[in-house]
Image 1 (cartoon, rainbow, N blue to C red):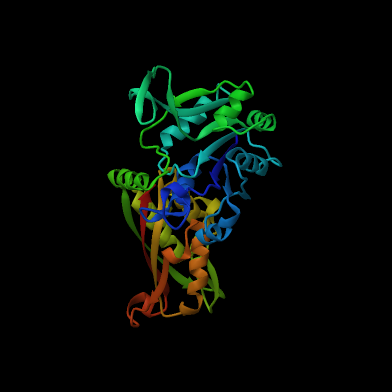
Image 2 (tube, rainbow, N blue to C red):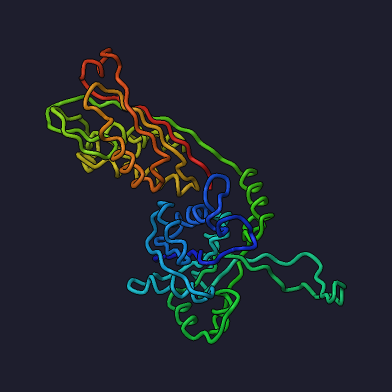
Length: 376
């Protein structure tokens, strides 16, 4: 079963204040839209982000990779249709449609919506109204409203992909959300339990509330990794994803990228989940000569699956030769691509051991890495 997600981020969000639309503003060190993407990514196979035409440069600067980036429309339903169209050439079975301004959506809500789609064509989270409801006019209470059967709608709203595409095609006017689109087409929508923390950021006060909610559930993990590989015959070395010409090669069961191995082990360490040898045993012949980015990708995906993003990485290579300086930028870029984070969150540097020990005798290279994971 293939599951896609559409993140609607084409609005301007002026009520939130600030110099940027709300989805681009900072929330505890990350843009709102980055947190939203990170929350959905572990649960879906593909992501389409729907942007305002004016936000292309902001998206590029963010450096996040998704499957589709499309330009939105003047209305929300038009933007959602643009997102749906992005998957038309290879339609998923299910699609989740989510507001970019709901960055605190939990894994529980997402999985509950997906589970409900096993037996319904549509499902969405909601909270029952618990406060008394009044009607009013001219600043005065004019009556009361029965709250029984009333709910506060949330996202992500999930659908059978082909059903919601057909519903949007039949739409004759603007609607409040995709549940309304589905119901207008005669599709029944199941309600799953929402959460009070799944707030939609609309005003400046909502930013304050979201910041407090994140602080209350703050989970920051640090890990370190250390690796060593000896030199042997060869004409190049792999270091932090970059092939460097050299008179000798590092020896190992895989490509012996000592830097990437240290970074990978640092992530496993922060998660409390062992090391490379446990996940990719050297006794297994399938990993002989394997590219180390396989290991690092696995570690990053494992972190995401447990609700973490890699916040930063610091890697130190200990060697006399080759010289690392000319390759630092390429190494940072290679690691950033694999981990899907900004290159300015990565440090790769080198030091010598003053001709002491095995690295000083040029018998091999050592690497030390530290990483920080942050719960999203």
